[in-house]
Image: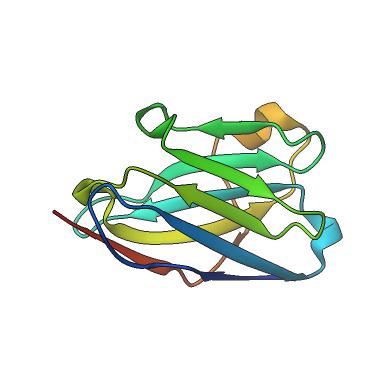
Length: 125
């Protein structure tokens, strides 16, 4: 089993920045693909970014490229640096993890096995 715990959420004004963290523990050797998702009130959950542990290949949803950056440390703790935040970025942000057979499978942002409880990000105008 893998445990994921998000932190770093909060309230920020439009144009501000936040850095989310996802602490990973447990059987981390069983995972090699980490991701961030978000879900805004009344909307479906959407993928934000993924990172493949071997080589660090990253993928972003097109609408967020250039503003959000996913990264990972050697312990597979994962981070999401968010800049130039907009009110429409307001959502619960979730960390997720799974095993994949390569960066392409990691990039499709689907079938994640492990999820954190989420951290709330609120952006005011």
